Length: 75
Image 1 (tube, rainbow, N blue to C red):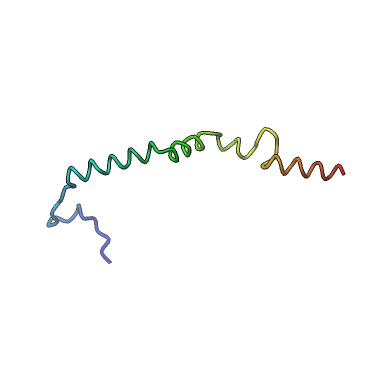
Image 2 (cartoon, helix red, strand yellow; image 1 turned 60 degrees about the horizontal axis):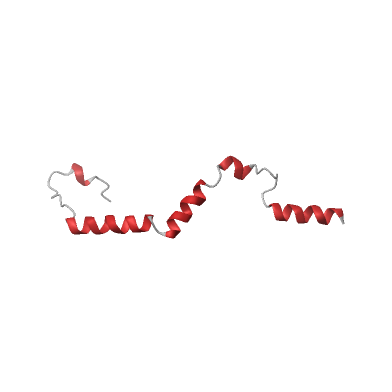
């Protein structure tokens, strides 16, 4: 198996991407980045730092489950 880099080989012809294809790929990437799904994912990534996820203010990873368990213990 040859794992050498093509840029190190002297006899390899370098080809450029056609301009129309480059423009098309940039347009596709821009539309994907502006899609509702991408924007929602970006908001999710910025919602809370990791420290808050591991130590929430209410003290439970799943607050509804913790409240249900607490109510069950009281019964």
